[in-house]
Length: 170
Image (cartoon, rainbow, N blue to C red; front, side, top):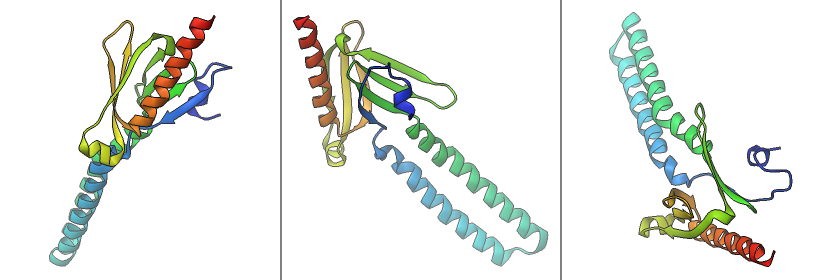
């Protein structure tokens, strides 16, 4: 049983499970490329100019700085991206995020009063956007970088409509 399935009720059906759009990983990838190029350049420069113990110490310093940058600016955002989940079931919308500290919110379909989306030109080119869910008790909740936000909007609207229609029929 995978992650989303373990948080579902026994007869609840998973409809959609998404992570944020890959555009969240753009700057970590750029950082990886630039940091690796600079570390390679620095390592080559040190290998040609320094000798003996000082060369070894400087190469270790370059390696430690490179690893520190990768953990801080690359690994952390990738782990954050991977641990953020947007889940739609036949009963509710779930948002889960976090590695060490987990946060989550569940919105029952019956409490959703409106579903909107927003995306600019760049987001439209990438197929992403912000999903805005209005519930009957709170201010609207906004979720950025939802992949294929228009399709998610239509799916969620359909689920809310079906839920309200089923409730009226009972």
